[in-house]
Length: 70
Image (tube, rainbow, N blue to C red; front, side):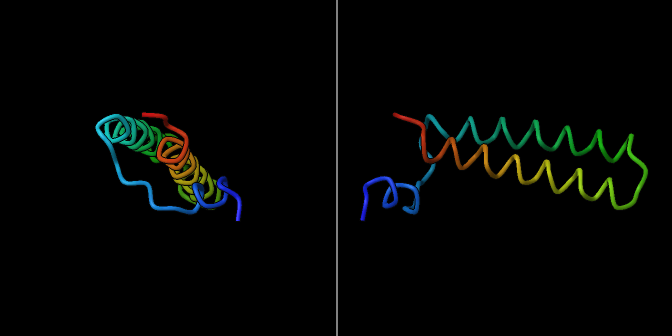
């Protein structure tokens, strides 16, 4: 099995470098989600927008966890 696959699917605990980055991503995603709730009428499009923000947050945090070099 390749090192890339092993690294990608391994557990990546938070570190002093990554924990604050994860927090910043989460804080900004929450702020954007709140703005969507404020401005976009309730319904399918609001729900899709919120899902997209959540997905972007998860991918960004995965990138931080997996690709950050200490």
